Amino acid sequence: MENGTVKIDALDNESGKPLRYWVLNDLIHKAADGGAKHIVVENVLGQRFIGACMEHKDLLLEIHGTPGNDLGVFMSGPRIEVFGNCEDQIGNTMDHGEIVVHGNAWDVTGLAARGGKIFVRGNGGYRIGIHMKAYREAKPVVVYGGGVKEFFGEYMAGGTLVALGMRIGNGSIKDLPPEEVVRGSIGCGMHGGAIYIRGEVSEHQLGVGASIRPFTEEDSRLLKPILEEFSKRFGVPMETIESRGFTKIMPASSRPFGAYYNPRSV
Image (tube, rainbow, N blue to C red; front, top):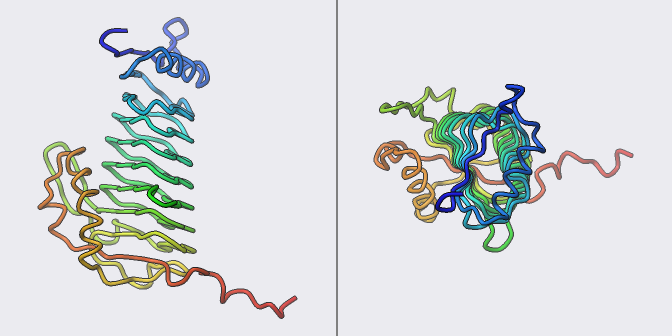
């Protein structure tokens, strides 16, 4: 360890193959428990559960490569920064901490997260933010710089989801076509929290139980520090982010499927 930094190679030098995920995670946990404040993991190739259940609140876990599913699952404290793309379910049931992805992060990001922040520079897949929740001051935040696919915010119960719809490259930033920012069934079954889409959203894109609401000054105050953090993480000017307005989507009721059940049908 040098100045609190530990470097770990996720590649087995003898076999030339990636370390098994439990071997890699054991090395990471032992380094953190030994007092490391900055762990750099190189050559990551699909290993799952990196950062699982870690509670080291002053730890930066830097990952180079492509982590596998469930990055940061049940995490409560560390900051994870990924220089690459992620597979599915990052931040699964995350309680506290931060995950920053300098690439894409695919399906089911933030599954049942109950706190913490996730910032993704690129695009996402399906069911992002599903079952996200909140409790008192604990309110999870997930922001995508690019576009996302169907069922964004499905069954959402709390927190804040944002899709900015930009293609953020090295030295260039362009707006995606409207049809690529977010797809259909937005907020299907949501009964809490709020979704913000940069640009216009049509009613036919909404899922069951979701509704478009006016974007107010209160929404602007809520979003500003979140967008400033995103701007700082990825070097996107605030004036670029704010060059388009936002569409706010919230639950239409606390029982999105209440009208779909007939008590006399059985």
